[in-house]
Length: 308
Image (tube, rainbow, N blue to C red; front, side, top):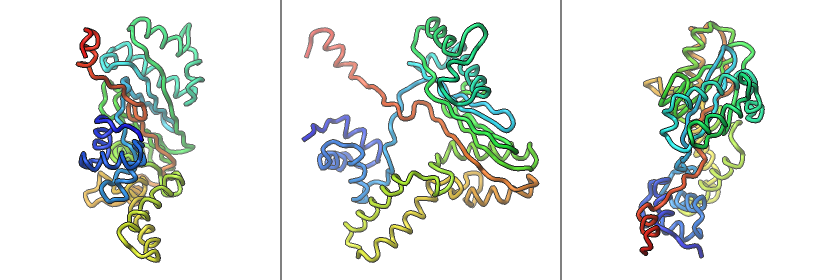
């Protein structure tokens, strides 16, 4: 059986908001497996957490830039937040975003792209040598439409076009460009706040949907619900789940009555002067998915001095 540490319990508690003792029991019941423990808590009705939130570790900046019908978002990581406030690093991020806008979202292609007498990879190496801290272009994504706009929004902006979170949203339309751009920015702000996982239910990962289905079914089964009722209850539960994670079905943050995003976009067509279709969105939050390395500073000092 795995050893359940205080750090593991703390992480599960921060992820789910469930009490310490329940978290410890969940980890014990699932041999220390965090994901399984989250599901165990959900089946008990103790947590609504859909997945591990994950405390992000990487520092750096998210850059986003658009040009009419296309846009890109990139993540450039550094070791410390101090470097993210360095003007040279900030300029590097903006330069890489502009290059990505021209060559596309393939990281290798961006690194190989010429910049002056060098390449993007060379510029990053030069910055590492000058600033004295490791940094890397971690990822990039792009969107493009035939007609319409790609809009962007930077949350926690450090400089124009770069900050702690970046979103791009693509709108296909023959309508007024300025009105589309304004709507696109509002939608990008919504994506930043609501963090949708897909445009609509068809875009969700089937494995994730199946996991939701199984967790809900087990939860109601443990509550003693009849088998012939569980399927219907689960289907209704999935509809609620779709409203939580699908962009077009989420309650629009800019509408006081919380109308669905899809309805808000439809209603905007009159002002824009043509049909509007959201063809895609990308949301990058700094360091998401990268595990943070933590250490016990007092223990390190004691170890260095030969104490136990």
